[in-house]
Structures are given as C-alpha cells and as structure tokens.
Image (cartoon, rainbow, N blue to C red; front, side, top):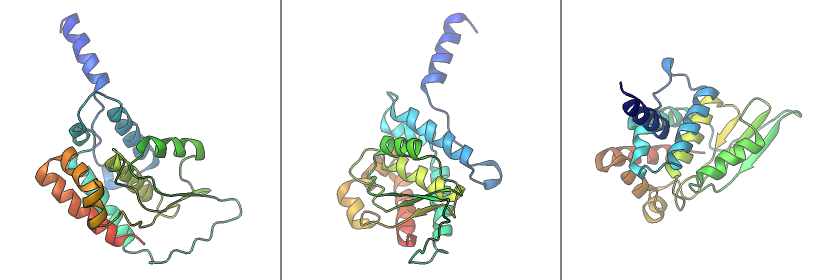
Length: 196
C-alpha cells in the first residue's frame, strides 16, 4: 500500500466510527455500553448523514436491544418500589427527548450506573431531539447491563400517537430506511407497552 493510499485509509478509519456487534455470549456489560456510547457520539459529530447510524448501530443490534430490554421489562411490576441502601445515590432523570449529548454529559457528571449509583429515567426518551435512536439505545443497554440499578419508566412519548406526531417514527425511518425502520418501530411499540 502506497503512502497516499495508507493516509486515505487511516483518515477514513478515524473518521468512520466502527460498527458495534452484539456482545459475544449475549451479555451486555458496562464496557460494551461505553463502547456503544462512544461510537454513537463519534457518529453524531461526523459529517456522515443520519443514515450512517445504521452502520454504527446495525439494525440487528438495535433489534436485540429492543427484544432483550422488552423481555426484561415485562417481568418488572407496573409500580416499582425502590429500596436503595443508605450508601446508594439515586439519580432521577426526566424528559431526555432525544438529547443524546445531554444524556452522555449527565452520565459523565453523575457516574456510570452501579450498585451504589442507581438511575431512574422518567420516560420521554425520544421525539423532538435529533438523537432519539441513540438515547434509547444507550438507555436500553444500561438497563441490560445493570437491571437492578437502572429503571426505565414510560412517559407519554413512548406510544404510537406521540412518536408519529413528534418525530421518533420518522427518525427511525430516516436512519434505518423504510422496511428496517418500520420493523424497529414495531419493536419500539412493544418496548413502550412493557415499560412500567
């Protein structure tokens, strides 16, 4: 490979966030979530069109996030009663509305979810902001990595009416294309129905 060709390859590699495959063995870890978050953040700051998110977060991975998280949520009670210990911090976050960079900043300030650092996300994860796909993917991943320390609640935007009017359905169709976007939207509606 010549110097010019190598330089072009390196520039492309650094500018294009890598794809995230579903974790080997199917176990979502904190490290995997951080890698996913970093890749998605790099993609939002690139000059790639919105559709590029499907290269960073493939439909198959997004489907797994929806499926695994829905499976987990249907086993939670409709009314959650939290009993944190005295040494546990509970961070309550509401109305992220697709503001991905705000969510990442909040996690940076308050710290990653852990047995002593819980999160309650009060719904309205999507719509209005440009990065509802990214916000919801990261929140579902954290829920899967720390099911006893991350709680996702349903807001009024986790339903068909609001997401058709305020943009999340259109965002999925734009970022994943017609049929794949529609399939993911059906998964989203199932997730919304399972949220407490």
